Length: 98
Length: 472
Image (cartoon, rainbow over all chains, first blue to last red; front, side, top):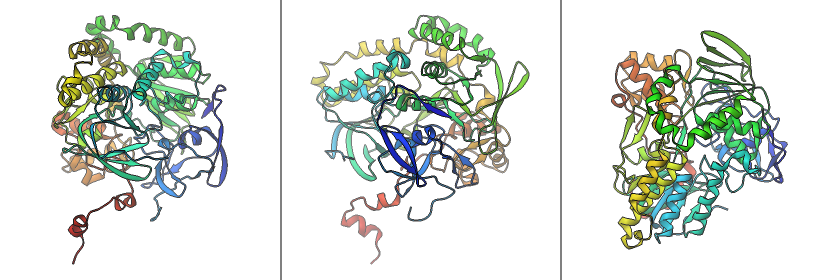
């Protein structure tokens, strides 16, 4: 859906999405890194299980919710990627303790 | 990396580091007031100057001169003594000017003598059939990715809607080598006539020449369909096509990405939760705070600057930030105010910056069918409530947005009404034959952004706090 412009010279950062290594760039938000990658980053909603991707990318819509380093329901569009970060795509409701 | 505020008390706390907040904090700190700037994003700039200190887009022409103005504002803030904390989410503000802010998963509490809210705007909901499908996003979302990560659309891309941002985004995508297959312009034909009486002010504003040349740049490369009166996205779990009606003719085109935009509206959540009075704005079709000429709200000590005070654009936001900060300096350190630009000069700057706004508001007033959906179209994205669900609830007695919560949970999901509130107000107003002002809005409360119970539980408590809730 999106591609990186050639002028982007930022260093690479490796993150893991459901255990699979994904190349992001320093300064990417988690959501931007997911949308720039080829992984299927669609979460499914807690209410009906409908598939969703980020909608607003500015912290208001909450359609970018992901589990980051074990913490659920984080807004991926507000969190910058970090080396070795573990991302889980959320399917349905969160479990207690996460 | 997260740093809590250095003090418990500040003269001025500015919330939001967009154009208004940057200008307000630099003015207030420059006048010697202890100033704290809290901002939710990774870096300063808000939406219009997003990633101004870190963008990988190095060719300055691609983002345009209006964008780079932001670096001067950031420099002015950095040169001042303001304390700036990024990735700081304010989740509570009350009438005592007590502020709760979440930083790195822990909450801190500060008190201010004056608060300047510069929480800006968000894109107006665009509730069309299929707008929740993966592959449908706001134009602002695409622009955010373009500015902060130099990402551009490369699949089959359709941009639909109206307003200046849409043309700016299209131009930027093309300049960065991105793909746009078609632009669907939803501006109502009648709006051109309605806007005509306000055209002179616009023609003599700086927006006119810039807007015209940008539209020319885009139209030379992309097919633009004007007079679009119906719009729908479709696909099975993923956007596959966009269908529209223009000039009475329906057309369906394959698409991987649909970017929607029909203007921006004030982001009211924090101000409303603090008890600031808002009124329905019939021209801008949104809730705007009731403010005096210096931006002071109905709650003593809380001022609002920037688009959160009513949509005025980035230039107006900067001046409103300076006005609100000057008013704070006048009340807290009158001697220091003498060194600042005079209020009369700032007000004349504001009048200049707001020139042409009525024309834009009238021309780009979104059509009713794109604000007030029908049938199975989702209104509340979080709780997945449709227009029909809302109307059914009205039929059995729901009187306004707050009652509707009990019927359907609209506005009670994580976005707290940001993506459905205006739609619910207008839909219920139409169904009940009332004005939006009479129908009202959700009663908003802290926390205005979700925080974990673990974070709340970790908040330091006194013995009295514990005694109040523990038995025995």
